[in-house]
Length: 356
Image (cartoon, rainbow, N blue to C red; front, side, top):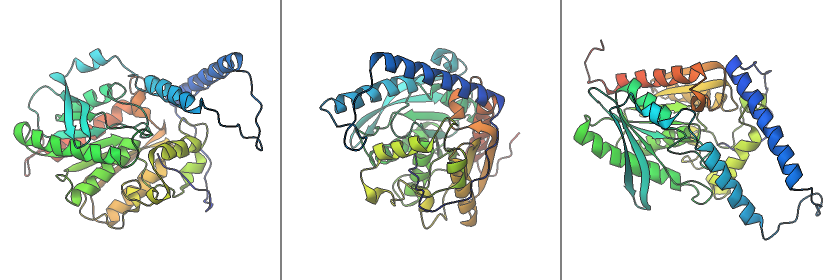
């Protein structure tokens, strides 16, 4: 996720009311948060904080962090719809390993029924810190069905154990592997897709592929991506608190991922700041209206168009960040996957062929 700076004030318009499904989700999350706080208060009485209000570090800090990450990852890698039911409409789902210079990555390959054309590398969101093969299983099943393409979901290395640019390197290795598989089985074309932090990686992979690091995708599909590092946008302030993803969380994710100040300006972390966006694959960029990252996706769509890249941009009204993860009860989640799948199907269509 982006880390954001408040050094330059921007005009922040008043927030829009989230749609009904989003409001219900926010109410449920607030209730869960109150329950956790009450349980924590009962189990862990307040400690005296010194040093101007800061708690003194203890030898157990690393253990606490490790426990927190383990619990976070366990909770966030839970699918919103049963994995077995999601897989039923597909021809098959294959569990496999993708080779990289750093070792093998666990992955799942989603193969739809019928004639398969093209392959999609899907990079999951989760702030570079959590989520994985289970959290995004159903989403990839739906994307495979809608696109008619094989979809590869990879378990790239996560921060803070593996910091930037480990996830970028894994993503490029996965794209190279998938391009080889597509050449053998599905016509040779590949595309790249991702949501949130995965949208960041998808945009970075497209730029790195243009530079020769991997075969160039025919399309990039970016769902509510984080793209601009420290640059501040109005939506960061308008929806910075109380709308599922907060600015505080964005900053924490960035701190886990990058290694130092020099990484903030690296276009492999902030692809929106790349000085030359010409020659990139066509893009479909989908954002949520009530999301601090909304304006980043809109700004990147505008910048790509100015560079001569074909772009389809769509913002779902009243939707929250990560609404794809809740597609089972959020209609916009299903619609966004259909929209992306339809665009991929067109991108993989043989040149000159007419869609029926």
